[in-house]
Image (cartoon, rainbow, N blue to C red):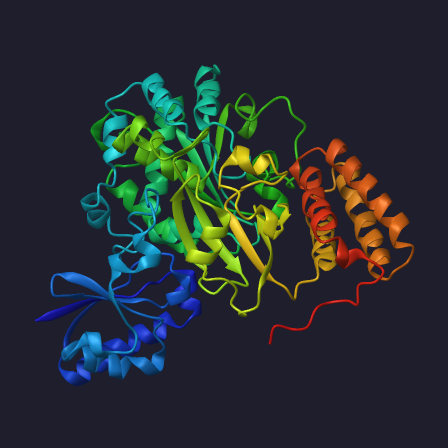
Length: 520
């Protein structure tokens, strides 16, 4: 009898030695005379358990993790005898509490099989949304996306249907679909995980978007630091083209859509959509003045849909299951599910997909398991390096765009970075300003100069050089950056700084003795 085992080949698992473990599994199986079929799947996003080994056993998939190279011989012995007796045995994969309690729509297929196998994708309802879209006209597709309540998952949360309608209505012989895969926020990895675990879902979403607005050409602008995603996407695009999911005659429908993969410029600012478009055109990534909007004059001056990976991937669920099905998840104006990425000083880091409305405290405690250090939680930053630092009094805020806006915070791309009580929040405020100074495109003065002055002011405050006066200057500088910056880079850098000043004022006080003791 052949035993089928699954071991991820995503970036996280590879960094933790998955390739060496895979090679050892093959050798150990040969030595024991075991018939082993090794499938290199995508990760399920339970990074605290990676490398996660799954085995088909007794009609279900059971899991072991996190697996180290030294565990392989004993694991092979257990597979031949009593798997449940192994210390790394986790039981059925789908019953792992961290995974079982999630509401996975976008990441439902992640980890199920070989991410490049088209047969596996189709067997798991892949391309069902595309098949439905091919039977609809442009306006019907846009209506479905609009009625679903889907909003952009890249940070701004702009309604996807409105953006698509604008591009559909714009007269032009050529239109474009651009996927922003330049995922650069600290603590985020959902785009990478989806591209490495379920790449055809992204392709399917982009094809649907092209059908919806009359665009025949698409581009994926991929972060340069994602070599594994680049390899998988390139192979997926080639295989999709071979099977006529791309090209001049999509699945015999007479409708066309072509797709290219482009590699990013290694700059955080190129995650801003207009800077990204300049970079795609071969220029230096610089923020454009708006109007005109990219939906009217985007790539090469043509109407362009710019959405991020998770937005385009979610479109497949909307078309497959219907707008109302998707809309039934979530609260208020935040519909569907949010892919939360738990990172930083957290015990159980990984991806959690839940309907909007879940509580931040429960997310970090119940899924994250508290801090990795075991020390008390002190601050949580949500929404990337430009997100506010939230104190304990705000951890009961529901994960909802409007609720977060109500506390001067943002959900952004869903990154959640956890800090214990050893963190120095004055240093974190300095990091925000320094990040802006390094990553600014330099086009507007408030961002280019303001961030440099911000670092200088915070350094003076930390050095106890007239801290009260310099704190007042810092607040005024934040006002200027917020009101005068051309894009969110400079306009939102004040958010983490202001939140640190407001909720962790003791770290800026002359009486502060400096950083807290190490967590070690």
